[in-house]
Image 1 (cartoon, rainbow, N blue to C red):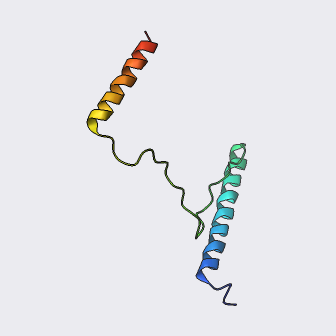
Image 2: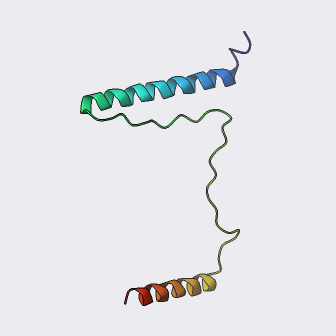
Image 3: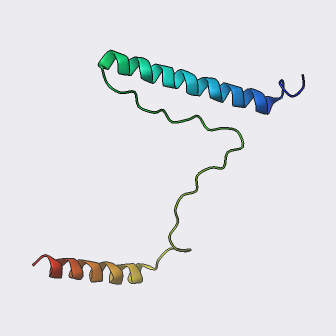
Amino acid sequence: MAYWSSQAKTNAILADIFDMLAQINANLVAVGSHKVAKKTKPYPRPGDKAKKEKKIGKNALPAAELDSWLAQKRKAYKDRHK
């Protein structure tokens, strides 16, 4: 009995119900518009790992270095599109 009444299990069940209702809603909209129903985005589950953002480099690039890099890219672009 304690397993079914735990907060984690309840949250998982509610997330499943949310997903089913969202898909039913998408199906009803699709039927009304004569289109194919799109797959809905699942509700985040408790304990799921969050998607990490892609990072490039560790620190901010110094302004002088950035300006130099941009100048090189602009010159290369101009040379290609003459």
